[in-house]
Amino acid sequence: SEDNLALHLQHYVNLSGQFTQVISSEQSSFIQSSTGEFWIKKPNQFRWHYTTPYVQKIISNGDKLWVYDEDLEQVTIKDASQSVGSSPLAVILGSIELDTLFNITQLDNSEQLEWLMLTPKEDSSGFEFIKVGFKDGLLNKMRLHDSFGQTTDLLFTDVTINEPIVDETFEFIVPDGADVFEETPN
Amino acid sequence: CASTSIIKTEESSLPTLHNAEKVLAINEWRLLGRLSVRNMRQSWFTTLEWNHRKGIDDLTLSTSLGGVVAKILYSKQGILLTDEEGVLQHVSEEELASLLGYSAPLKHMKYWVRGVLSPEFQGPSSREYLDDTVLFEQGGWNVQLERFQSYGEVVLPARVTLIKEDLKIKLVVDKWWMEK
Image 1 (tube, each protein chain N blue to C red):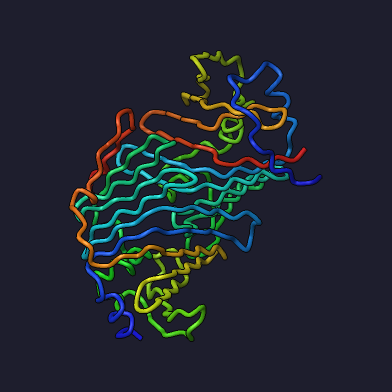
Image 2: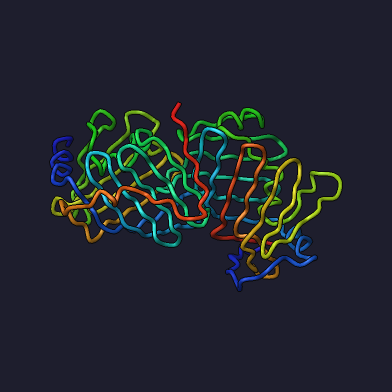
């Protein structure tokens, strides 16, 4: 299964597209849905941009990580090394040996997708498992499930691979009036 | 009592005099919002679901991608914290502060997020009105309430900023549910 995942992830160096995210919880009736765009450039550059129902940007140029929320008018800047860890972005970035962080198993095909399940070897990712669905070798769906019964479903559309992405995509210009806070590395 | 998700009716300017009474008359409420917290060295961004029911405050903090990072059950009986691995523990206010990395004035926040003064403090608190912002100070906290909106018969702030020494907490509320 690790080889299968590696095979899929090796298809691309650059990846971009749109996403729809739906968070649902066994414990409460409400559902949170949001949409946005994403750009990925291996090994460690990404832009994860929520556009509805509110604007939130999570951007890394490999050195710095910016997190910006428009309504909060807050920008926090952290060291990029803390950003990915064993989070779902680590899977999409595929930049580190995933099999050192996750146990990877092949699941039965469903929804015309080939599914792989990643279970974190360490408990620090915040998720009990991450399922990744590929369609014709392209990333199509992700399902994240945490230990509180909260599930996040991500659907990726208009996915393009290996299209050139300018480096400015992974830089962030602080908007006027925003409250900026840069964390000093320990 | 039926759970009503009161849909924002229209932009409002500022809460009227009787608004506080009406807000405090609502016993059970729930909000969904986004929280940013920063102290001298660190910062946190989380989604916040806050459920106030039968005098118990049930707070769920999660990441933008949905993973729950902590659940806090806050009541007169004490504080029950569940961490991201699902481990439950009773904690004191001090222990909660050291685990979270900051000391959130939950006892007062449950009033401030609804735009009313915390009754936990004695003595008058003068309020300042600046355009569509309300400012006051309680217990060393500078409280700033903005973007008021009408929800049924009450007016609530959609953005709350709390500052005390080097700690800054900002909350925007995306949704309210209220039950009489």
